[in-house]
Length: 157
Image 1 (cartoon, rainbow, N blue to C red):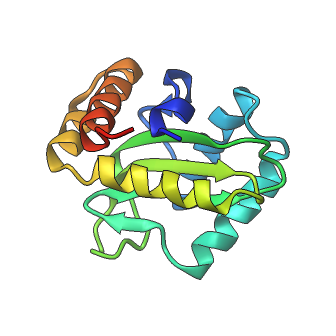
Image 2: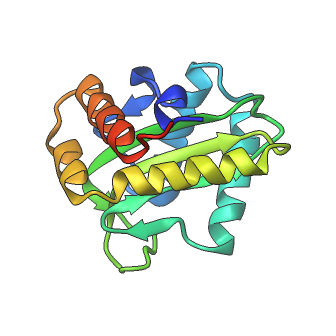
């Protein structure tokens, strides 16, 4: 499954306006809820925060990938947000996260969940892509950047 198959233009929010990790996660969950991708938003939030308490999803380089498996997600969905000032995600490099991907998926497909996490990590690992996302002025341009990078990073798919 490709990242760009589950991340759509209407699921990209910028700028994120929350000032805490929980607030920006809620903003992204609202996008997923509006799109009908998740059921009980509070239950999914609890699952994301429970996962976050196990280990930070702030992967460094200005990126965080909060995620969870939930009975309130029938299929996989990804929302993305950009925060102009960065958010403290207790990232591994101790720096704020500016680009945040939220992945929610069903409990019964752990393999797909891990593959999507890997795809997000690989696509966003390119510093030029991260910089272009931060410079973008539309959800469409951000999605196009991610699609181009995914297509070039995963030529065999």
